[in-house]
Length: 306
Ligand SMILES: NC(=O)c1ccc[n+]([C@@H]2O[C@H](COP(=O)([O-])OP(=O)(O)OC[C@H]3O[C@@H](n4cnc5c(N)ncnc54)[C@H](OP(=O)(O)O)[C@@H]3O)[C@@H](O)[C@H]2O)c1
Image (cartoon, rainbow, N blue to C red):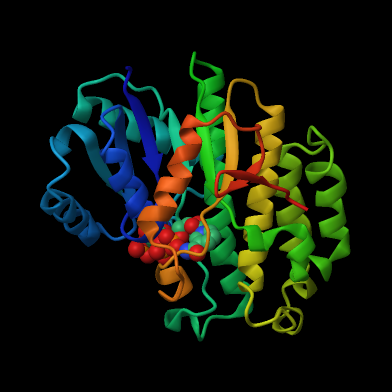
């Protein structure tokens, strides 16, 4: 079987780390994992070494240090970065890869419960959440699709979504009907999206982010506390929309979103029932299953976006 190169963002902990470990158990995958802190590179590698089920690690995995709050500010930078890490991986693995065959946009943040962000302004909170959860996957997937369209490459993209960010349960977007309705009528309901990914980008940057009222503390404070915070809800609903657009309008690519369940990680303050390992196994099953392009899946089943 031919070897596939998989790029997973955010492998230092949580679901991303479990995805990497589970893929390493299968011989047909080589992995590029990203870590935000340089010091984590050694730690993550060491933890894989001590995991005795993993052999020939140097031939299977390479870690790249990148902080998405600081790097990849546009599509061109993402394009250059993907080409550069693919070239480095080709040398490292002694194989020729023009680009990853599979991209898993896993890295994500929800700052509501994070002590480090207690004193952050609402605007900054929104910007940071959108940068990691939406703009980075946007730049990476659009670049990978562009690189692939000029080569004989059919990439698979999996975006970590969240069923709690469906439109019908998304109380935050209900409070901005003009955005919720646009996404419903032009992206989620038609079989093929009527908006392009650039339209989506502009909808977010030119309307949501330019209108201070959309992100006001008053509006955000109305979101029930049990739900993810408002910036998280917005970031994931736009990520779902990007998935639908790319999956239904781009040729030669399989693009899906996946809800991992409620998983016991830092993001859920380690209070959730599902282990990252089980979540990773559920997610990776999708790679071997025929899926409807552009759709959201959870527990192996299709979940509607609206
Ligand atoms: N846990 C759940 O129940 C759940 C449910 C639905 C969806 N999801 C989604 O699943 C994905 C993984 O979540 P998780 O629960 O595994 O969270 P997690 O344990 O907090 O892991 C998040 C990963 O993202 C990385 N990351 C965060 N900010 C970054 C940045 N600025 N630059 C580069 N990497 C960054 C983290 O690196 P550091 O270690 O350096 O912070 C970490 O590796 C997220 O997209 C999340 O929204 C999770």
